[in-house]
Image 1 (cartoon, rainbow, N blue to C red):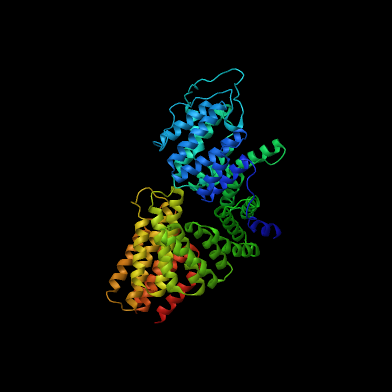
Image 2 (cartoon, rainbow, N blue to C red):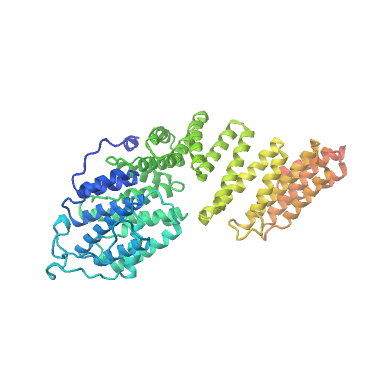
Amino acid sequence: MRDLRAALRPPDLPLPYPGDVLAAACRVSDLIHAERYGDARRLAEAFRDRPADPAHRLTLLGAALRGAVLMADGEQIDRDTADMVTLLTRSGHRELAGALIAMLLDRGPLQGRAAPADPPAVDPAGPAGPAGTAGPDASVRRGRRRGRQVPPRPEMLALARGLSLTGPGEVRGAEIDPRRTVARLRAALDAVPVVREQMPGDPETRLRVALAQALELAGERAAATTQALDALERLEQTDADAGGALPDPLRLATAARTVLARTLRTERPLHAARHALDALAALHEVDDPPLRVGLITHLLQAFMAAGAIDHASLTAGRLASLQRTVQRESLRTGPLLAVAAQRVQAERYDAAWVPLERARRIARDHRDHRSCLEAARLAASIHERTGDHPAALHELGLLAAEARWLADDLATARPERAQLVSTELKAQALVLRRALDLGRTAMVHEAAAAIEHRARPEGGRPLLPPELLWDHRVDARVARFIAAAEASGRQEEGATLADCDRRRREALQIVDEAPAGHDARARYWAAYIDDRHAQMLADRGKRTAALRAARRARDGWEHLGRADDVARAEVLITQLDEA
């Protein structure tokens, strides 16, 4: 508990002013991730011309360039790119400089000062900017002459494109196609052995962290876990080789642990919590509310999955307060929903409504369908637990609608789409049962129609196993039959025994379409339909027809070995024989 309290403690503000260029690069990266682009730009400008090691200056310029790209500031992109190209060329990395220019030109024309077609004229033996360091081949080349452009190899271009997808702006996941990002990052990793000697540093760890993030967004959680663990192992080995912890301006260790806190949450929640705590422990000198609040959210979810009630309660209380420090409103829905979920788990239902409704309002304002889905799921759970079944029915309908919207969204990855289709079908199945309990006949038919549409066999390549889709279709047809029977018993307008019999035949027709290998499940449904049909006929005084249906149901239950159901059918048969 002591480690937890220390991890949840905010940073000591104000933070000390950076003492050198590398510290400034770290702070600029943190400010960019916190979306404080103006502060990041001002700090980068203050340290741009200070003497420093070329590698440290390159880190600062790279961070400044990422901020300019995220702000879509063409003039600053042009300036930062030119400075990076100059520094890379003077440091002997002409090919990487050419790849950087080619990669940025591929994005479109830069605004402001024109980007050079060739690396600028430099003095390889002269100072690399204010740092005053010479290039690696200074002993060979003398005097000033125009640098000759080295056409970048395809591997270097692939690496430059991969590196452009990394950085603090992507730690939370950018609005890009994760599958395309995965392909580009893998191509960059494949290129590393070919061009490693031409790089100012080892880019492999940075690429692996970015690949882990992209794989997680693409729904490949196991692969994301592997890449994040590999990145952490490389970072630890580098620190060990250096004899101590090295500066981590891009917070690569924090980013890798953040991925692990999410991907391990379900299967190994205690490991996920440990990674989240370790990541938070490294942020005591970092003023980044989105990163801190996001990590605490993952920590809370891991504690809940592990059943650590006291730890979860403490974390939720702190998170409820800290989420207010996040400036962008759309980033507060996740923390608010996590707090609401913890309070539901603790059976504090009234307290759960406050963060839940706040998160729902924000999600609706920003058209955040995923957060709306989670809000509906939590709200339905609260209503079910408190016995408000009509309200639960309404929330289940919202849950199914949000899942359907997300499943049909072309931007949704295929693995996630399958999960969303399953969520939609399960929510509609719960709507069927709750609507039957409440006597909402029209709602039963609406939900059944939605299930049959989603689970239809001609609906294209199925996302779920055929037997599962068939089972949902049978469930929908049976619900229609039961709803028709109960509506007839209540003498609702338009409800007739003929309609009941038609619905029963339709249900049996679907039962007969059982996939191969699912005969037992088909027999269950047939026996269940006969059982309900027998009870319906008995309630209406149709003794002979009820006896036939009851005997068919009893035989079906006997074949399945369901003793309790057999006993119930025997009781009905006895009552009908004595009538």
